[in-house]
Amino acid sequence: MGGMVRRAAGGGGAGTGTGRGTGAAKVRAPRRPGLRLPPLEPYEEAGRLEPDGDYDALEFRETDLSGQDGAGARFMDCALTGCVLDEASLRRARLLDSLLTGVRGVGTDLAEATLRDVELHDARLGGTQLHGAVLERVLVRGGKIDYLNLRRSRLKDVVFEGCVLVEPDFGGARLERVAFVDCALKQADLSAATLTDVDLRGAAPLDVTRGVDRLAGAVISPSQLLDLAPVLAAELGVRVQGTD
Image (cartoon, rainbow, N blue to C red):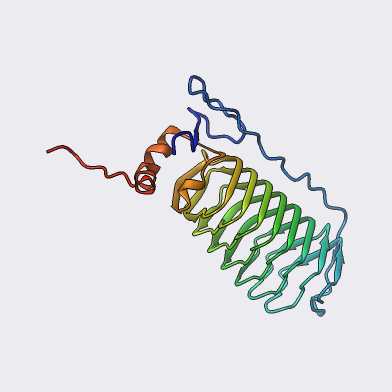
């Protein structure tokens, strides 16, 4: 377990990698999406999503997409603002160069979806299925997401900023250049995950309930190391007790 987690002294920002005197390597910062939306046309609210549909340069505003089937659909240069996504089926959908603001929903199915150059702001989501998905250059800013299923997903250049993640499941996922900035990470599952250049210093709290042995490739702060000490000791089978 020695050397499993890289420590960095001071500095919580992504990609700072100060660590002077600790021998810590600099963590590579994620690339953020360079999102510039073109002029958008309003989405025809009387219509319904179609499987494998194409949606280009559309604005979905306060649209109720609950229970609709958009599996395999492609959303390109779109904005979804204040939309309801309860039980919406977007399995294998592709969200490209798009902005989602204030979306809310329970049980949204985005399994095996592709999100590239996407920003998600102030979402309130629960039980979102993103297992097997690919996220590249994605910014999740603000909001709260409960029970996010990211099992066996691939995250590259992803930033979680100013948001709350409750019981996120990263089991078997691959995370590369992922940063948590001023973000609450509660009861995270990292079982069988692979982490490369993952900056956890901005996570407060940093609460890992499973898979603490998978933290190789992550950078944490000295104070976080102390917080994780009981979990690390349990993983090693070390008993910690005072002297008589």
